[in-house]
Length: 198
Image 1 (tube, one colour):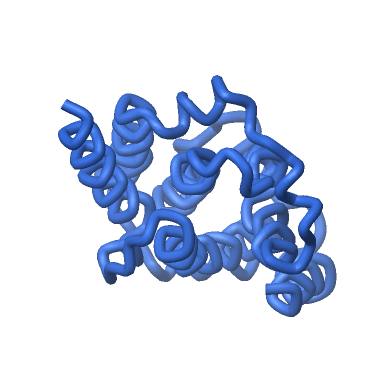
Image 2: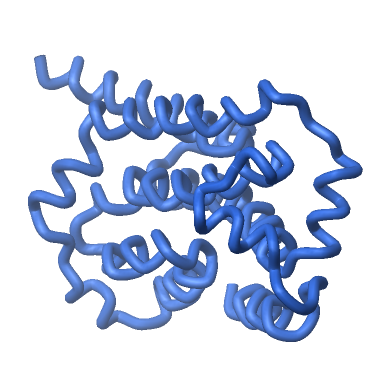
């Protein structure tokens, strides 16, 4: 995990294509989505949902020390999560970082998982305007934001599978379906636990 984190940082600083004024970056920040390739908008939106998914996976374990990393990931994605997965098991001090009870309850609720699934579906709406892989590739080459967020997305997908296996005890290929796969598995698991209590 440490090596992957270092490589991600090096890529973002030195290797990501794009130079000069990043027009796509400014368009996304302004919310001018109409002038951006729909697939870019969707990936950009999904990166905002991924931290919520990791919150649902990690935060129900109150003493795993994850909550500061999860909160930081809301602005930096894998850049914040990879250090956590590296430190986990290597630094016992993480166990002293206890997740606040209210945060743990929110993250472990079925309602929270439902919100994640709804946001995933909303993030797909831009794709109804059509998708062009050529246009996405052009955006990848011209925009450092698009190139970095694409790599970030490609790291978060297998990382969510790993987190599901490690923390929720679910080892399923369904977890490789970005966001909605793990969310559906968490929904089912949460329902089974609720049934056991009744």
